[in-house]
Image (cartoon, rainbow, N blue to C red):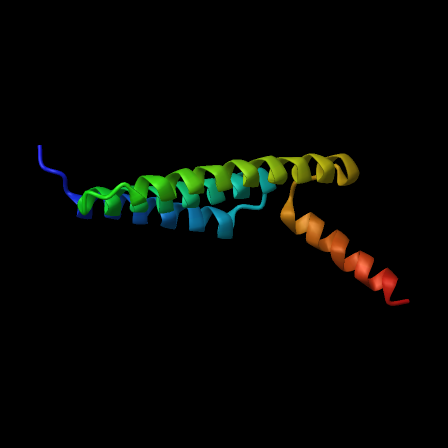
Length: 109
């Protein structure tokens, strides 16, 4: 079965757009983090497809870097989410923005 890099790049683009839509439309921080992970995996898939197209291992190396970056992003992101939930008892981005705006009002007094 021949390798079709265009099909893989189309799948990567669809995944990236789905992740972007998730980042822009979701209100829960955890769903936003998952959407960012989908976007990173789409970029990694595009690198692997490009590397396979030209027979170079560079795409796989870049994917390993993306995996390492995604792992660190998840660990820091989930730590921040847990701390935010402990302090404010919410994971809704809109409520956290309202808390920030109230804090800015009090600090300007």
